[in-house]
Image (cartoon, rainbow, N blue to C red; front, side):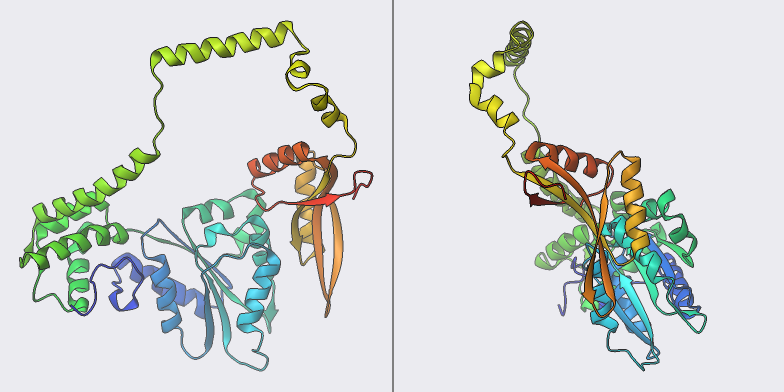
Length: 380
């Protein structure tokens, strides 16, 4: 066996272009050749998005300079640095730069805003940079948000990768066996292919997980055919491993008697608190009250994001204002004409206040927050 036919790694030599994949792949190439500027490709986990990205690198000819960004940028500045590293030495280069962002569903709204800015870059009436966003369905949900109306309107092609169809499963299995050099030793039956479709709904990665075990057993037992029974046995092993993880992580139930005791204890504490408002002081002593009113305790400002355009920073600040959060914008000169605009909540916040505000920010979709220590008598 030259290679494992159903390895879970993305190997271009095993690429099987189904009807759906061929259609999406052709549409991507057409959109790039039209210089649409922005293309969005979505698909569920395991449907072949990453391998399509790698195939694009091979297919795009010498007139393109294409790169795949596999680690999503966390900030607009990081995105700019990544693109600068990829295309920074293209001065005088006639090739068209193409940036393919894999796992783009992890890009936060600041980076998506920055992509909107990048799509504005033009040269001689054509988009300077071709951008392909590839990600899971959450990417489409983000872009469809009213905040990104302008970005959504600039997408030249919206494409969706779908699982294999029922009639394609057997062709897919035979293709991978042939590439691995074991098609003469083992093969799947039609009934096995039908069972795999029912078990996986045609998702290639799930097919590979089961088929990998089935082929291994068939080779060990010197069986030339893999039928539905063999596939079912392999599927049961995969399912067993999943259920083991779920059981280990599942919550433990309390006995009815213990649940009643806990409920009585909670009610008792609540009643005591109601009739004895000073209970907290008696529990923690005067030190607790002093800590709450101590003006010398640490205080913080919160840094929320940095942008290369003042308009983006102001838009972010306005969004925060709608949440009753008063933000400020600070500018930092990076040299060479680059200015970074930082958005922060000046506070000052105590440790507990900062934690509460960060929790609120997370709930409204702002994940990247950094606490900045400040002097207690200083408001940033």
